[in-house]
Length: 352
Image 1 (tube, rainbow, N blue to C red):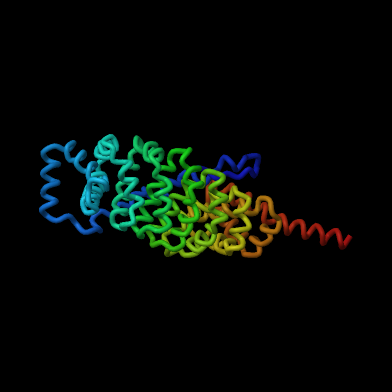
Image 2: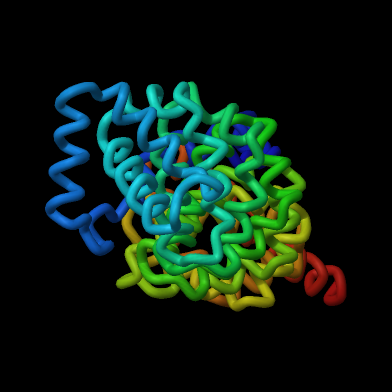
């Protein structure tokens, strides 16, 4: 997933100098299962499950799957079964495959739509854990998980929302699912989670948006959903621990024409200039990349960026950096100086 600019500088296409080549280091693995944050099973029930697991793990799996069905099990039995599946699939890849093959996916998706918050949370998290296995992703999506997960993003518990965002991220790793998830209404709810969630929610929302917005139509949805406001706010707060993630998302969105006025309207220019001035090396490179794309086709934006004091920190970056960052900084300097050169040419012409 790369955001590329078509600008040519020193006979080199800057499209070959994407800043997102190492983006994986900005996005930690999205696995938000918070097992242990719910009431534990009674010791008697727990002993029964452990006994079954020790005797015959396959029997245990069949037993659990059979107790997910509301037509034959009470809500407490469903909760118990879903919680145990959540635990079994948290760290063991082999259990994710076994449970999927035993038919756990469809009944778990049904639990995602439960009106009981705890049962819904267990269902969402179990689906997330199953989606960590590549073999399960396509089956989860084709079994109808996307729309229920999007509904959880809108109205679930905070933990359920975070885990739904992570599950959708995992499903979006199949290219065709990106469009389906975007068209199911996930983007506005992810933007809302980015704006109003806790740190984990913001991180999960940013990661999911980064994955989904490699699809052009999802970029437009994100911008129209107001994503630039929380991105700018998070980038302005160096204590948020979200500067890098937010910058990567914004950089990805800049290829959509709608994104540029949105960045300006949300006060993004001074924030980006500050990042180039005082951010980490990677943040500076991201800031320059975004500003370069902003200024590429607009004299108005070039003038605005120059007036915010961007030239000095960009020049400093061009002198201290190598490769991609240096070339991008030099290209941005050239653009920022053009309005001044044009103004001087007009003055000289008037004098003559």
